[in-house]
Length: 213
Image (cartoon, rainbow, N blue to C red; front, side, top):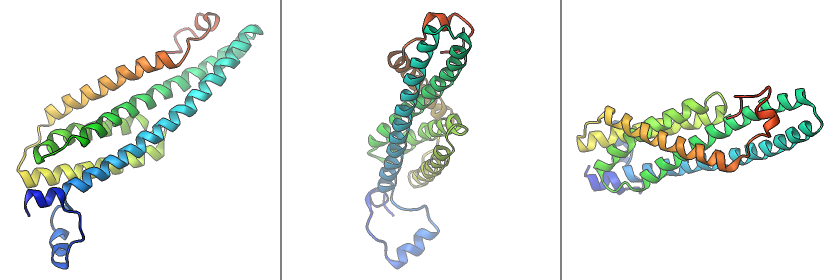
């Protein structure tokens, strides 16, 4: 099967082709990559929704902390501050994951030839695995979806390597994945600073010193 066929074809296969594909890598690459993009977009949207909910919780807790401080209720403000610290930790993880997946989605959209598939998907798989590991305990439903997306990208990558005879450079892929994760972490950190106000000094310097961040 030619590269053009493996890349573009999406019409229904005949009986002979179905039998052929049963023992060959599955399907042309382009529709599978586009499907992976849609799956990633769903996860980005899901993480967006989670991020908004966490922000609402943050704002509500922050108001309660301010009120507790005004009432000189140090113990209650301390409890709330620790709860807020956990919310902000989750928010940071979600923002980091969302930005990383968004970068992968953008990179998938730039694939135009077979060589791009291997170069793009190798680090993409590593990023998806990192995101999955970071969110697995916090959001099991996202963990399952990330596992399926990882398997999907792995199948496309294997198929592309077989069709084009490309060798995957895992060292280079891991370095690129690390760069994507670092960039996402940096942007997430800056977004957190812009999005969430600092705790009042009475709490920040008191019993919760070093907790929030």
